Length: 211
Image 1 (cartoon, rainbow, N blue to C red):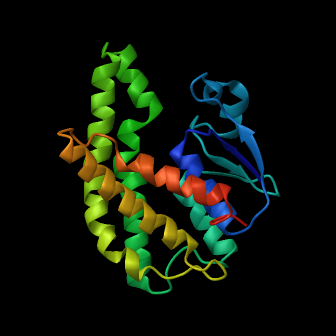
Image 2 (cartoon, rainbow, N blue to C red):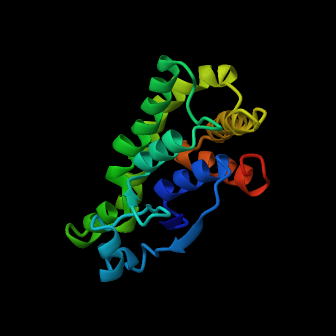
């Protein structure tokens, strides 16, 4: 398999996490979104949407959209499972994933931010305010939904609670950082997504959530 992605893309990031959790071998191809590689004729021939990620399978089939790719991996390589075994648990996990992929991400996508600048002339501080507002608003709801459930998250088969460990540590750090900034009279404007990515990245790099 070959994964086309960008190191700063959260959509590509979540697919890499799924591939690594399942212990799958894959090749990576770098598409530099800031330089416009996604608009090249070669890449548009592979993915007409001009987005990352795109996963090319062994038979040449091309899959796009991160959640669809993850669903494919879950259906074709069910062990270790990424979803809980019960229907309610699976629905809750999909709800959290879709809150990020469908509600938060689309309005903070690079091409949206660039459109705000090029078409409407918004300056960087205004765009950053937009970006942080949308992410913080979305994750406020996600935090309220998930923090009280972290302790009940099931362990991944063969991966004793390491993914859960990352989430618990993320929760503690988010709360500590928020408290420290509030005490200093500062406004919490560092989107929780950053902390999620930091701790999952650490887990992947040090083997906690890697094959």
